Length: 353
Image (cartoon, rainbow, N blue to C red; front, side):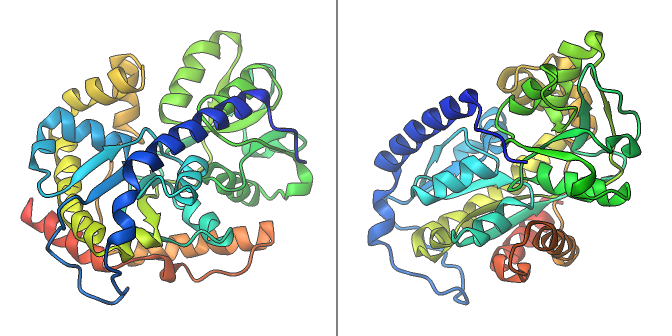
């Protein structure tokens, strides 16, 4: 069932639109004069003067700046945007305001289904995904849900174009339920929208992850708020951007260098957990150090696979489920990957070992 857009979401959209207009004004001019790079051409090494990468990668921004690795950026500039997640990143791509962003595996599918061509250029996974899920099902204070079977008849927050929406569909399938057995309340998961819907008992269930889950339970646990795990693997995260980013020879060359720094940043996070927790989860996300450590020790840890075959296979399975349950065209996800960067990342991982 589709609900009217809450006023909070309208306000958020206005803020995002203002941000996008500012980003477009300061970062989009260099692309128009760049030479076009064929999809099968070798990635260039030379970065033209004046090249700018506009990146919505908040965790990597924090890691690079905290570690000092940001000083290794040479020959190009980075304009950072506090943008991540599917809806915001796709809106930014369409506004020509962003070159790449961090998301789960669903937004590239919806970008493609809504005529926004994108490419995936980096992927990460959790070292123990079933033991350390990114999302759990947050339960409203007045709702009685302790097992997946209890979802029958409940109102569930549902964001079709985000990872949370795919997780809901997979969870229903695992519980032997269909969309007809529950009431799907369509809400975009932006900032605290899911938490607020739960806290006000507008919905019974909503997928929450990381700082959102920790904050929700801390605020409303005394009122009866709880969470349960789905048992579904949900650890896929990736870096993607508009196709034209990687057709721009200058940006493609800069991104080749940047992904080497991205690998170093991920390694720094692994080797400096306390510094990372303080800089990102405490200072950036507003959690206590103890809550930040709890998030990091579960869904916050990542590994960088040197080969993408397994990742692509799992994303294809997700795309097939969404095509079936949401009436989308079938999609061959291999076409979304720019595997030139797979080799770049694999070499960077080996160099850092």
